[in-house]
Amino acid sequence: MSPPVTKQRILDAAEHLFARDGYHATSLRCITQAAKANLAAVNYHFGSKEALLEAVIVRRLTPLNEMRLGQLEALMQRAERSRRVPSCREVLRTFVEPTLRQRQKDSETGDFIALIGRTLAEPRGVAMTIFMRHMDPLMIKLFQALSLALPGLSQQLLFWRLHFAIGSLSHIMRCHERYSLRPEDVNIDLPVDELVELFLDFAAAGMEAQRWSV
Image (cartoon, rainbow, N blue to C red; front, side, top):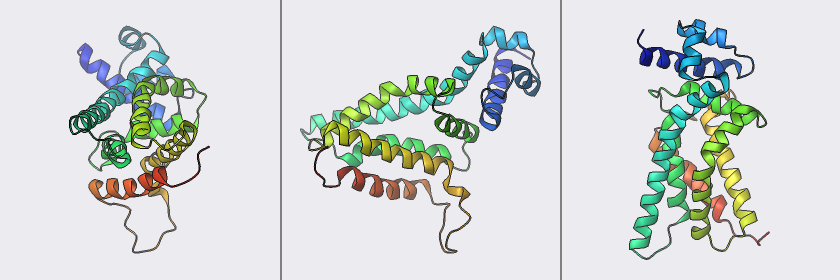
């Protein structure tokens, strides 16, 4: 196999195994066997197991964050040109819509979503450190934009409300299809556009709720 093909196969195998078994339980031997490669190829392309994990995360997360950031910056520029403050719903949409589109049936990111779900469930692990390092710049900009949209909220209250909203979004990405107890007429396979609007109705209402400052 050519080096680019080998690298791709290693990334695909590592993503699947890290998502299924976790970072610590997955050996480089398991990855190389699944990728039909050898340990030298892993060392050549990535250098270490931790660097391989980072490459797996960055491969999917970087283009997603670029899309989120591009939408956020475009929103802020439009708002500035029209001399208005963006709404909370508009700001949240720049983060929520690209995220929920990752879970479409024809998406190739199922293993990545599972990996991030496992990462968030094990917050003290190396995967969480890598994930947050690549998320922090975007989250800072998102928080700043929401501060402009919701000037009446203290930083403390804004932080917690955003924390709750992102937790709800994470739940949708990872868990909602696992519910076995639901009314027969409830459809959990909604079109993405409808799911985005439903989520924004919920999240924006929570972010904007009237309450004393903390």
